[in-house]
Image (cartoon, rainbow, N blue to C red; front, side, top):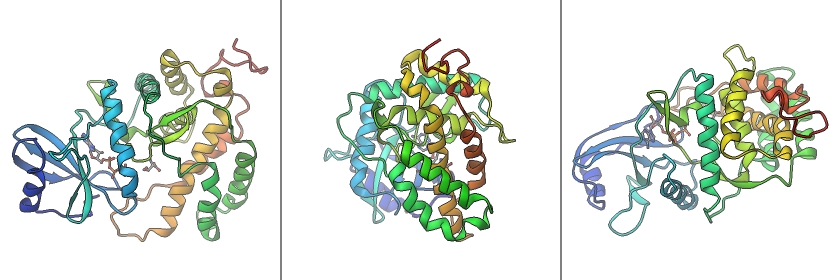
Length: 330
Ligand SMILES: Nc1ncnc2c1ncn2[C@@H]1O[C@H](COP(=O)(O)OP(=O)(O)OP(=O)(O)O)[C@@H](O)[C@H]1O
Ligand SMILES: N[C@@H](CCO)C(=O)O
């Protein structure tokens, strides 16, 4: 569970006195999540989430994340809205940690999303990209193509413990991605970690996005590629074209991908798979067993990489008539 920092009622009540959100009636730690400590608060004014930011979050980057949520929410996107304290600040300090309170989002994440949910995700993602266009702050993606080799080098010595073929495969992926990573695709604010556990649904309707702590300024279509990886593979590791088609249909209905963006989906998806393989591999090899950190299986992404490597055309992601071999819209 992810409650790294304990708080008591007295310090919490004192912290809450800085905010205009009524009086505390109950609070409890939330087990899910691995990066930060989250508490669910009930006050006389409603439900809120209190986050204490742990070591892996750089406090200097918090204004970007919180102002982004504020901006997207003001643009009509469903996402947690930071609560501003009486002193005008969104970030305070509690139990020696930077801390923020955000509004509670109704809904639950889906363990088994279906094609209709992928379509709704595509719509929501494109809406987020459009809403992000007027956000003026920028944050470099710390986990993009330039960062993958240094990350890989920290795991390289033990990578063959996970899978003997991994060293050759990852080296080839890195060389290919570094030489061919797209440079001129439309950029903007991306979520960069929009896995099913960061998207809530209520009665089968998308009710909002959470966890913007990897958000950054990068290639918009890369966010689509992250979602193709996270939403469109089955438990048996096969790619589900119906789900991919639904996700892309949803996205294209709001922000149509250009020909260049569509054609880049195979390389962007391969890059996204490598990014999650590398962070999972690093955690797998370095985080000791028995800590709170839930280690996710890097092999899931080794298998996804193998799929993307053999993709010849973006149509294989579920766009049968969208891209011809000459790259023209059919
Ligand atoms: N605004 C919110 N409204 C409702 N529930 C929330 C909200 N924010 C967080 N949660 C709950 O807290 C859990 C953990 O949140 P989150 O994923 O942001 O944590 P994290 O430790 O930063 O995550 P991760 O390890 O996935 O990066 C979520 O799964 C959800 O149950
Ligand atoms: N979504 C990430 C972990 C948290 O950011 C993964 O599944 O590897």
